[in-house]
Image (cartoon, rainbow over all chains, first blue to last red):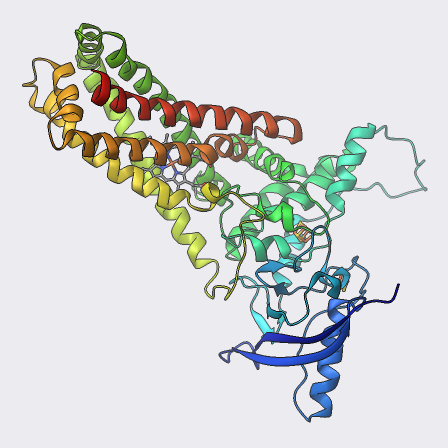
Length: 253
Length: 218
Ligand code: HEM
Ligand code: SF4
Ligand code: FES
């Protein structure tokens, strides 16, 4: 069956020249968009139109366009990654929108994620948190046997689930407190659940939380909005684990 | 230590422990208040109120309770201000209703309104009974507030509103306090949320029933 065509869409897009300027919404129209088009392709079409008109195209982040890199962002109609569940923006398709609709597109908004240009924000804060987590100890020498360290299936599954985090920042963008707890809890959990990561687990939890606080992310109030908007379905059970890891590490000090 | 209690999770720990302490207090308070409905002579309730005025309670437990409230309120203000600051520029449109409950997003507002209610409530009962100490029949004092001619219905209504606000605060607060101290996982979360709703409804409905019972049936 051929895809339907959305005859006209109105786009309200946040435009901002650079980090220092004050931004504002601009309104654009795009016509004849197939419902099979991805959301980012729709923005590509808009940008081509803008370039042909001699205007500045809209800057937005993207890379893999298959939901694995975490680069694409966008707050679409009031929701991180738009009106669909368990997806990144590059996996969002225009069939989720009605003909004639007005779509509001904003950048992630958080003090710790300053805007670089238009819809692109600086997520270096996440890298800084990762760096503060430090290393895991691995013995040098010959190649270790793959099954030398026994790990229960449950632990392996939970570690893998947490490791699915792609660092997109949707959790921070969604959270009413701009809290980075879901991201940090995923990063702490996927190592804490494995014996290789256990060695530095206490230090990792303390350092990453300290960095997160220092960078100005908000405090978690357990609303759970992050896990709903997370494209990788990271559970806030990880946040409970992070709280446990952090509190027990601090109490032991 | 300061890096512990000053950290985001440390502050949440304080929030959680003070909240759980208040959860326990509210339960005891409701049980004592229920005496109002089980003995129309007022003897049972008066005995309870008398016990609560004993010196060990007044000078031993009440300061702890006051401190619990104060800590809970001060930290709620610190956390909420920090959270406001973490997003200097707000979204033009944000739709959180699909991803979180209303209570969870309005804990500060709900808590603040509960505080307004508590202030009024202290004025009604705590000050005359415990501070002035010139009340002979506590049961009569309570009953009069809710049955007194033109104002009885208004006060009954205000107490019902207070009960509902507290219930809403607890509908999120109960399970949240366990999550904050790390006592939760995928299995326990469902249990704690259910238990939290049961507790919140019990508290909300309990404190709603008492003024209505006194107004209409006592
Ligand atoms: C009898 C009265 C109260 C009870 C039983 C109560 C109970 C609780 C509980 C159990 C929590 C959850 C703690 C956590 O998430 O770790 C909580 C959170 C909260 N309470 Fe209360 N509370 C009461 C009064 C108040 C008052 C008077 C205020 C404010 C003026 C307040 C403001 C807050 C706020 C803002 C939160 C959310 C904090 C956060 O999640 O970080 N509460 N409360
Ligand atoms: S936890 Fe989810 S929403 Fe947050 S950064 Fe990781 S993948 Fe994105
Ligand atoms: S562009 Fe890579 S996840 Fe969307």
